[in-house]
Amino acid sequence: LLPSFKKLIDTGNGVRINYESLNGDQIIEGIDRGSLDFGVISTNQSFNNYNTITLPFEDHWGIAFPAGHSFDQRNEIVAADLRNQNLIIPRQLDSSSQLLAYLDEYVDNYKIVATYDMHYNMRAMVNNKLGLALTFDKPIYHQGNIHFRRLQYLQPIRSIMIWRKDHQLTR
Image (cartoon, rainbow, N blue to C red; front, side, top):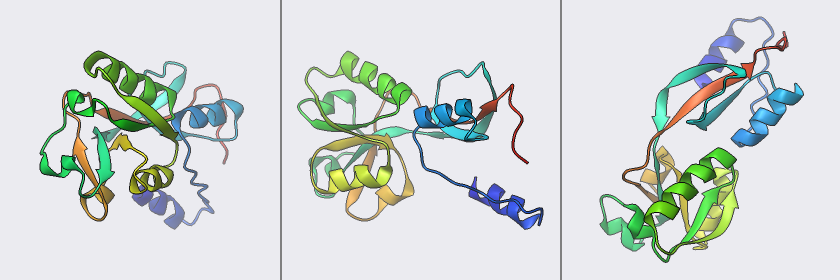
C-alpha cells in the first residue's frame, strides 16, 4: 500500500494520507461512522455491504516466540505443540474467532493470557516472556530477538480493502 500512497501524493493534487493502525473491528466502525473513507482488513470474512478489492497477497498464521525458545529447533509448528502454552492472541473479533475455533478443535489445554491490537505491544509481551503470540508472518520475525514459525493446517488470511457502497468519499 505504501508505494500506492506515494504515487497518489506524487500526483501533486494535494492528496494527504492519514495512515492509522487499527484492528479490523475499529476500521469497520470508522467506515460506518464516516470518519474513514476506506480501510485494509486482514480477514476471510465476506463483506457484502461494502465495496471490496482483494489485495494480491495473503498472510500466514504462526507463532512469535522469544529467541532461544524450544520452537527454535523446529521447522514447523502444529496445533498440538501449543498444549500448556500461555498464548497472546489478536483482539480483532473475526481473527480471534478463527484462532479460537482452531485451538478448541486441536489443542487440549491452552491458556490465553493477553490480547493485542498493535504488533508493537505484542512484541513487547513476547520479549518479556508473557506468552507466545499467534500472529502473521512478518519480515521482522526473521531477525532479532523474536522468532516465528508458521502454524501448519491453518488457512491463510486475505487482505481486503473495503469502503461503504452508499457513502460519498472525501475529495
